[in-house]
Image (cartoon, rainbow, N blue to C red; front, side, top):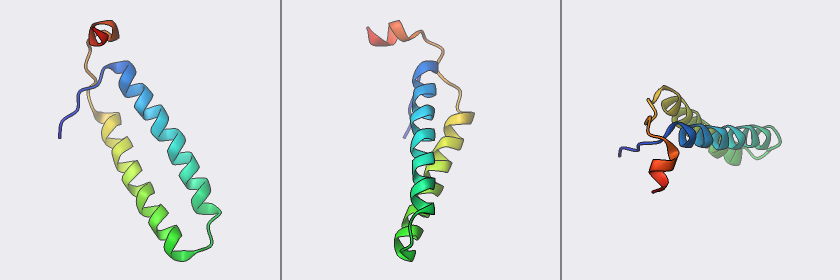
Length: 69
């Protein structure tokens, strides 16, 4: 799968992912059930992987106004 994002779109996605990552870390720290905690940690690893790939991705340099048509 390939996804092309404008600079502003990439920044917004990274911001949203960062917020969710922080929420997930709080949820993990407050969870006592071992199986649920393990499932949350797996989600966190996936989220970190996505964030890392987005950070190194070269954003599309087209202005947002052109993308909105």
